[in-house]
Amino acid sequence: MTGGITSPEAGWRQADGGPSVQRTGKRRRRRGRGGRGEVAMVDDVEFTSYYGRQIVKTPVWKSPDVPLYLFLGGAAGSSSILAAVADLTDRPTLTRVGRLTAGGGAILSVVALVHDLGRPERFLHMLRVFKPTSPLSVGTYILSPFGAAAGATAAVELLGWFPRLKRFGGVVAAIFGGPLATYTGVLLANTAVPSWHAAHTQLPYVFGGSAMAAGGGISMAFTPVDEAGPARKMAVAGAAIELAAMHEVENDHGLLSEPFHEGRPGAFMRAAKACTAAGAGLTVLAGRNRWGAVASGTLLAAGSLLTRFGVFEAGIASTKDPKYVVVPQRERLAARGNGHVSTVTR
Image (cartoon, rainbow, N blue to C red; front, side, top):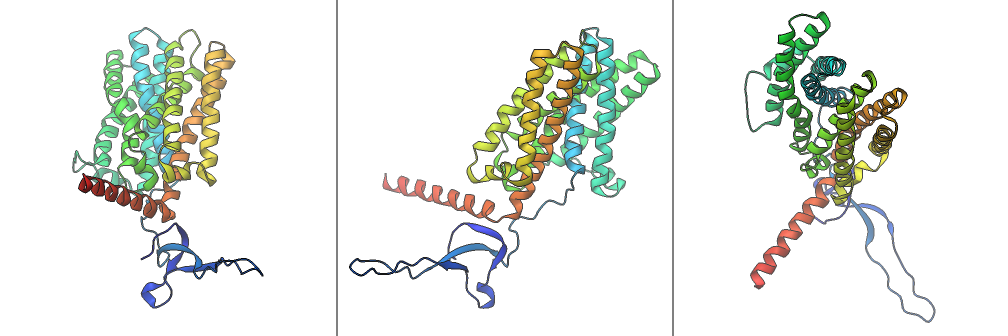
């Protein structure tokens, strides 16, 4: 079949006896009185997917369930690490805030995940098999012990019982907190969704940095400024990592970066960058003031949430237009062909 840029909502009619292209008009230059001209005999064409169907199926994951799960899990994971650091450096209020954020985020993320799955037993079935080559399976075994440890630590923190158990549970949660904050980026990149898969080296950094910005920002907002030093440092570092990695996602993958700039995903990403950059800047300038800490923490958490929605929506959009599958595929084939020719020539 003939190659070219594709567009959704149309189809090749080769199989049913019709034309293999969709006609959109003709380019024709007529002969002048004394000049020469060429007449274009081929119509302008626009190529589409077979029968107008998608080449890659759109994931069945639902919004806002999955973006909320990504955000809550990331914020919980980074908060658990922050709580462990605060406990070791004798910052009781920051420790308490971090533990409660980690426990609450873990519980709410599981709720969002189970709601997306439809039935609670589906989550339990995921625990029946451990498959190291599957990010989803590995992630399930990260989320489960983290949720148990963080939830139990938050409960005893609220009740004031068993101080040694609180510290032990906090350490266990912190061990799983880092993997929880980043594995979701690996999970998305491991799918066939074009714009996610193309950014497989950057998404874990995007999600890790976004989680640090959210956890640090939430802790800043609820902690006295004299104890919130580690939260400020985590928030600013996370925002810098998120913005740098997201810049590569949006600009380094040619056509597959396009969904991050257009339509609904583009609006999410522009708002996310504005909130994250403003939150990081305000943290540096006014994070040691109470009002500055609250405002910057709110902006950073909002930026992290919007980043998850933007990345999720961009991936969904890239499955709905066949050009995001066909054009990069043909570019890779052409590159392999050129490499083969150059090798033979040598």
